[in-house]
Image (cartoon, rainbow, N blue to C red):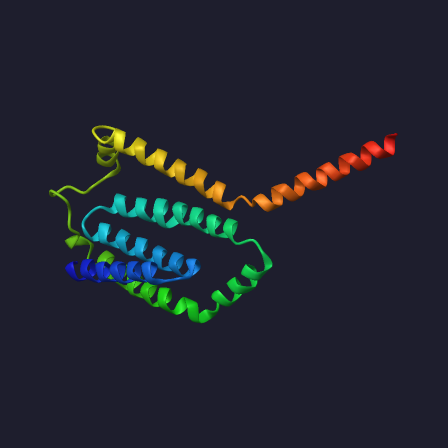
Length: 185
C-alpha cells in the first residue's frame, strides 16, 4: 500500500508541475484533472475513502466542469475555435493518458490489497466524522470557502462578458427605434 501512496503522490506532483508550466489552458486543465484524481488515490491509500470520493465528485467533477465553462466562455471567436481544434489532437492526450494508466494501475493494486488499507487513528474516515468536523468547529471556514467560490463565479461572469457585443446591441436597438419611429410619422 505504501507503493501505491508514493506512486500516486509522484503522479500528483508531476501533473501539478505540468499544470503550472503549460501555456495552454486546455492542456493545463487536463493535467489538473489528473492531479486531482491522483490526490484522490492518495486519500484512499491513507484510509479515507469518503474523502477520496469527495475529491473525485466535487473537484475532479464539478469544479472541472466549471473551469471548462469558463474556458469556453472566454474563447468564443472563430480564430480561437480553429486553434482549439489543433489543441485537441491525439498527441495532446499522450501525457494525461500515461498518467491515467499509472493511476488506474495504482488504484487497482490498492483495491486488491484492501486488507492492508491504512486508516487514520485506527478508524476509517467516514461521512459522519467529516460532517461533524465541517459543520462543527470548522463551519466558519466552510462558509468563507463558499463565499470565495461565489466571488470567483461572479468574477468569471464579469470577465466573460463582451462589452463590444453589448455596445453593438444598444446601437442596433437605437437604430431600430429610430426607424420604427420614423415609419409611424
